[in-house]
Image 1 (tube, rainbow, N blue to C red):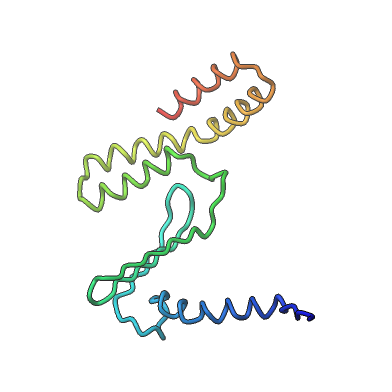
Image 2 (cartoon, rainbow, N blue to C red):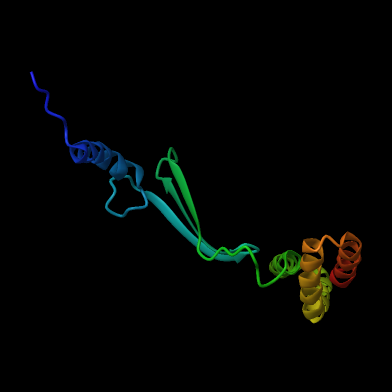
Length: 150
């Protein structure tokens, strides 16, 4: 006549127990896993901050898993996009032993770093002029920033 209600925590425990086996099969990056293969770890920094990348490929190549974790993403970066991009290109040019290109990039980076203080000041003025809806001044400031960056 009376029906006994299930404890909601019992349901959660049942769900957890169903996924325990699934987790052990799907986590080849765990050394205790039964799936054998090669794990590669990579850390680095790009225009968005630091990252860690871990890749796993099974011995037979049938399973490949890559995880990518951003460790210190910030919306306001210390360096602007162009400077970061130039530094990445410089690193690539040096690795490829393209020294003529590397010299050009180095000079561009130095010029940009020299002007960085002015650029930062102009960018904060630009943000304020946009907030104030002074669009003529905003266009003028934008053009000054572009001239300093190029």
